[in-house]
Each structure stands twice: as structure tokens, then as C-alpha cells.
Image (cartoon, rainbow over all chains, first blue to last red; front, side):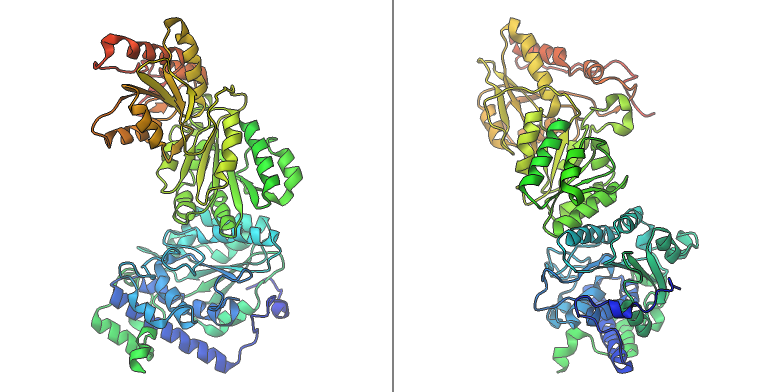
Amino acid sequence: MVSGLSGHNDQISHNGAVSTKRSPASIAQLEQKARKVRASCVQMAFDGREGHLSSALSCTDLLVALYNGWLNVSPDKPKAPDRDRFYFSKGHACTALYAALADAGFMPKQTLSSYGKTDSPLPNHSCRHALPILENSAGSLGHGLGLATGALYGLRLDNNPARAVVLMSDGECNEGSVWESAMFAAAQKLGNLLAIVDNNGLQAVGRSDVLMGHTSLEEKFRAFGWAARTINGNNMTEIVAALADVPFEKDRPTAIIAKTVGGSGIKFMEDQVLWHYRTPSEEEKNRALAELGEAPLQKELSHA
Amino acid sequence: MRKAFAEALFQAAEKDPRVIFLTGDLGFGTFDAYQAKFGPRYVNVGVAEAQLVNAAAGLALEGWRPIIYSIASFATGRPFEQIRISVGYAGLPVVIIGAGGGYTYASSGVTHHAGEDLGLMSLIPGMTVVAPGDPNEVAQLLPQLLKLSGPSYLRVGKYGEPAYQADDAVVLGRARLLREGNGADFAVVSTGQITSVVLDALELLKPDGIAPTVMQFHTVQPLDIVALDSLAKKVQTIIVVEEHMPVGGLAAAISTWRAARVSGPRIVRLGPPQALLLGNPTVPEMRKRLGFDAQAIAEMCRTIARPASRGGSVSAAQPANARLTSDPT
């Protein structure tokens, strides 16, 4: 595991946005939110006839944890100068991002119904022109980390305490640009940088572990000068605990390798390369929603 | 030109505290004064062009005015994806400097040739693409690029390019009139450092009494269509001289303008072919053998000026030397 530098719990929260200790009840609330977000993703994939459910569901718990108590961002002031910058770099998984944003109050929940439709603010790869509250557009892999490093370098020159978080995929780590950025982040001692790798093990047509030669992402980030830790990225308690420890080491960028399951939360989708692209049939959608036991956010109004 | 760029950069940074310079580990010694004065506003990202561009984009997102620097072939080709997505798609005001554009590094081999830099950058929607012809134009254009709200590419040469004089101001987006013609019904237009060679050709033509209009299209994108429309009323032929491959360069841009018209001047191009440049020639050798040095430009002007050539076919001299231009086969 890590660095031996525990006890950092008390030095985060530079902006007071973070509560480091979570009660079991609050963890249960986050878990319920995650089920709602998953249900929303399934509904979006069905309505919009667009896939990538596997990738959306694997990172859902991470997104919910970030947007509920960790990121210093507010729907009232989405462009506040000292906000934390969140770069969602795995754009194909954007249903989870949209649902997490809607759940956190950044857009009306009903907006989720427009996913994938022409001229929607929610296209099937996240676009900053369509949805200006985003920090970046995504869809092509390997860019989020570089953007974050440049932004942080500039923010530091401005004495701005904002942090930058990048959520990226393990397949994305095939891209050489990720490692150019990793080198820069360590060289420039960007201690306010957090990269979370959604390590779901699946890529578009293969398994990331095979394609990366059965090597450790945690060790790779360490070798590049980062502080890194591997957690279960579908376990809310572990996620919250790891986030509370960020930064793991002073003046080093932090990497959380979140071991996740593609399609997490819906048994018949879990760990199947098939569900990278597949869109659910009506029967599959209903079965998935039944298993989650939560209504999609975009359907809440009609249920009220 | 590079000295002019370093000085213009220094002045820009003095004037605007948001200007920040990033290099992909190039420019040894060139930016010492800048670095000494502006400290953390000088960033060497290493030999990492993808990161060079993405970090600049991240800075631009936070309101900085990044200027990024590498050799033209590395500044445009290697991070084309990052320029396309992080800069172009986002529409960010990043200024990309390609040092040694075109075939400035002819003798350094194919890896250092940038015969496609203007074309690659012109392909990015919203990109302003500029190739100054002399140090003064570099100094004049950089501050104008820094006022844009979107991205730009500035091709600079090496050291010691000759300066030329012209009354017409250097205005971004406007072709610059360098020499008014003496009634000749053709014009010579060019972009980048080859422009001084065009002016050399004019000297050679003095004994012939031939003096075409000469315009420098330092701004390749957006193309100055107003200037071309006006030129079309005055001349039958436009000779385009460029140090760029035919695909994507100034001649291609002007041909696209011409193709949108029912009638207009014919376009004759002088410049390197769409081929690998092997043989590691010096720049003057390369221009001579590929038929776009001062002699070749003057000769084409004479051919066009001859009454017999009106309406007939004109073909530019093409190199016979296979060592200079051979297929990769």
C-alpha cells in the first residue's frame, strides 16, 4: 500500500470543503446515490441508444464520492475562481458524469433525458461547448492529465489554492501522453494534483492487464515520482478513506489506482468486454433497474 | 528571425503579465534573458510535445497566454492530436511557434523538414497561420497574435534572414504589398522566408524591365481574399512561391480561392514537390535544384511576361535530381 504517511487526514481540507470522517450512515447515503446514478446511466444508455455502460458504471462510486463532500465546487458558483478543477478524461463514460452532476444539483435532473439527442447539452462524449460548466471536452484519451498539470502550474503562480482532479481510465494509460504529463507533474511538484485511474481492467476490445504486460499502475506512477495507492474503487468506504488522505505526500502528485469492475452494480454486465459498446434492450434495462432498486434521476419527477 | 522572436517575446511578457513561455527542450541560449527576467514564466517541459501542448492548453484555460516553442516539424506533427483537441476544439489562445519552418533545416534530414507545417496547422478550424518573411514581420506579428481569442501558429526561420523594406504596414490577416508593379499583368506572391528570395529575383529582372506586383502573404489562414479579389482585377497570372509542399500550403489555399470563382487569374506555383527531400542539401542548393531560387523565379517571370506565353501552358521547372526528391520506394 502506501508511503507510510498516514496521519495526513488532518492536513487536507485547505478550503474547508472536506469532512474527513464519514459515519456509516453517510456512507450508506453515498451508496444509495451511486445506485441512483447507475440507474440513470442505464436509462440514458437505453434512451440515447449509446453504449459505454461498462465504463460509466465502473467509475460511478468515484464520481459520487468526489461530488459529495470532496470537490470544492458549487452549483451556485460553477466557475468560482478557487473551485477545484475536475477533468473528466474518459469522455466515453460521460453518462456517469452527467448523472453525478445532476444528482449534485449542477443541472436539472430532467436534462438527463436529452442524453445523446441532437443539440443536447449532453452529447455522448462530453463537450464543453455543449455543457459549459465542464472544465474540458473529452472523448479522445490522454488529454485530461496534461490539461490539469498546465492549469495547476498557472494556478500556483496565481497563489490560487485550487486542487485539480483527473478521472481517467486504465486503457487511457496506454497513451504515451499520460506519462509525459506524469513526468511533468512530478518535476513541477504539483502537490495539488490528484489522478484517479478507473482500473476496470477492460478496454474496447481487450483486457488492460494483458495490453500493459501485467504491470502495476501503482508502481508506474511511483516510478514517475508520484505518491500512489491502490484501492477498491467500488467500495465507498475505501474511496472516502483514500480521498481523505489526499495528498498522500507533500509536494508530490497523488495517484489513486481504483480497482473497479466494468459494469459494476449490475450482475449480468459485470466484467464483460461486450458491455463496453452494447446498449441495453428494454428487457435488459428493466432487469438492471430492478436489480439496482432505484429509479433513474430523470424519472423522479414523473414518480412524484 | 529567431532573435527577433526572442526579443518580441521578451517585450510581450513585459507588457502582459499573463504571457508564459513553454519550450519542448529547445532554444539553447536563445531565451536566457527571458528566463532570467521572468523566472517561472519560462517552462521547459522536456522532450514531450504532447505535454507541451496540453500544459499550454491547461494554462490558457486559466487565463494565461501561453507561447509554446519547438522545431517546426516537432511543434506541429508530433502533437497534432493535442493541438486539434486541447487547443483547436477548445478554441484556446495558444500561440505555437515552429522554429526552422519549411526546409530551414534542409541539411539536417527528413526528420527536421517541416514542408507540411502550414498545411497541418491550416487544417485546424479557427487556427490563424502565419509565416513572416523577415525579422521585422516577426516582431510586428507576435503582438497581434497575442490579441487573438483563438489559437495561432507562427513559423519562424533561423538566424540572420535578410530584412526588407516596404511601406505597407504588417497587419495580421492582410497581405502585404511589398512592390507595386510597373504595369506587368502578373503578380508574384509568397509566404515566409522565401519572400526575400522573391525580392532578389526582382533585382535580377531589372535589366529586363520586368517589374511585377509582389505581395507577401504572411498570414496564410485566414487567407486575405480581399487582396486576391483586388489582384484578380489587375493581373492575368499569379505566381505563388512557397517553401512548403503543394498540399496545404499557400498555393493550395489560393487555388481554393480561385476554384470558387468562375473566372480569374491562372495560378502558377514554384516550390518543392510533394516528396521526401533526401540528400541533405544546403538551403540554397535545395532551392536551386527544386526550381524556386531567385534565378528560377526570375526565369518564370520572364516566361510569363513574354507575349507568346499568354494563354499557353506554363510548367515550372521540376528537379531532375533523384537524390533530392525520390519516392520512398
